[in-house]
Structures are given as C-alpha cells and as structure tokens.
Length: 309
Image (cartoon, rainbow, N blue to C red; front, side, top):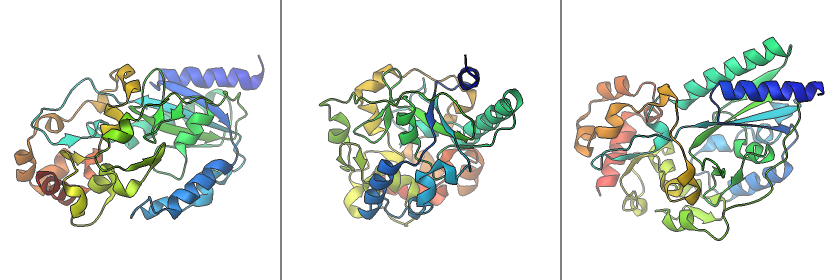
C-alpha cells in the first residue's frame, strides 16, 4: 500500500469515528465548469439580496486560493434527519434547525479531524469549512463520488437521501481520490419541482434563491415579505423542507445519533400563538445556540405575520 493510500484509509477511518456518514476525496483543482454555472446564476439575479454570494468568486472556484499548495479536498456528510416530528399546531421549521447550530457542532469535529491528521500523518496545512465560506460543497461532493445534484439543487445520495450537512477539508496532503459520481438518479421524477410552493426551482438543478421560502424566512432583511409570496408560505416560519420531504430518495433517510441535534422542545411544541407571545429576551435565551437566531426575533415575528395571511 502506497503512502497516499495508507493516509487515505486512515482519514476515512477517523471520519467514521467522528460520526460522519460519508467521506469522499477529490484532487484539488479549479472548478472551471462550476465557475461558469455560478457566474450565470449570479447574472440571473438568483442570489436576491444575498450579496455575499457575489463576493470572493475566485476563492469559490479554486481551492488553492483558500489553502496555498492544496492537493486534496476531503468532503464529509453529517446526518441531521430527526426521529421526532413537530406538533401539527406548530409553525413549520426546517429540520436542520431543530437543535444546536450545525456550524458549532461540525466545526468542532473538523478541528478534531485536522488535529488527528497532523498528529498521525505530519505537518499538514489544511482548512475546514461548513457552509460559511466560499466553497462549492456540492460540486466537491460530486467530484468525491458521494452523490449527484438533484433537480431540487440538493446533493442526493442513494443510501441516505439528502438530510445531511456537507463539510469540506482542503489540505496540501496527497491522497487517493475517489471516482467522481457520474450518474444522475432523478430520472423523470419532478416531484420537487411540482411541489415547490413558490416555483423557485426554475429548471432541473437550478434554484432561483430569491423565490425560495428559506430565503424569505431567513436571509431577507426587509421588514415585510413580498405580498405575492405571502399566500405561498404554506405555514413555514423558518426555512423550508418541501423539496426534500417529497423526494423519493429520502425514504432511505435514517435518524441521526448526534445529541447536540436533539430538538429544542419549543421547536416541536409551540403554537403560532405561543411564538407571537414570546418576548425578545426569551427568544434570545432559548435560541442563542440555534440557527433560529439568524433572522432574530423581529424576523421570526415578521414570518409569523406572513404565514397567517
């Protein structure tokens, strides 16, 4: 076994020990095709008011700009599918936001992962990312053989569906790359496109972010949600899971085992009236370590008004 093969096996073993459901490896290189697609997506204005999507374009498409001398991109998937369900009287909240903010949970695991690599392999330069840096995670996941990008724009896997977070670790380490995922298993199915309440999926795998319920309920900073979309909120107060819930591949999703993702009781049980009566102080204390803190109390109250109309 060569040294790259030995190190690759060691890394995949540690990824599994840390609780990642999958680990794939790709050779670090500029993502030229993805760069062209991203450029067109931005030109179409699908980012809405998410200006951060326009920044650091060159960093998004070239891992060597993030880690000088980058040789390998390690992509990791972490399950968040819950065993619990929300009360029918509760306003809908995307499943990823039911527990502790995944940024905290997965970043800690990435720090531990990198420390393990340095301790067991040597003085490796690397940086870990999870959804908060200019990295095209889904593209790297496909290049690492983990799955394909479905018609809803999410990474899909045959064994686990799509209820997982994607993390990447860019390193200057030579590793054995996996074969890219070359097939698409959506076939003629259009359930996600048909079910999207706001028709945000404009074509297979292409989502107009400025029409997505997740965008309106989390990213949009305006005081009001546009009138034309208020009637289409379908009860979603934070995020939206419609395109994942209807995906046939998610029948294979299995409940996670991460204690930090255990749902905050209020998420499952509070009614619209309970949320409306909640003070800003109580909201801050209850959701200080939750993704729900992102739109702040004012944003949640705005969303409640929209779903009641």
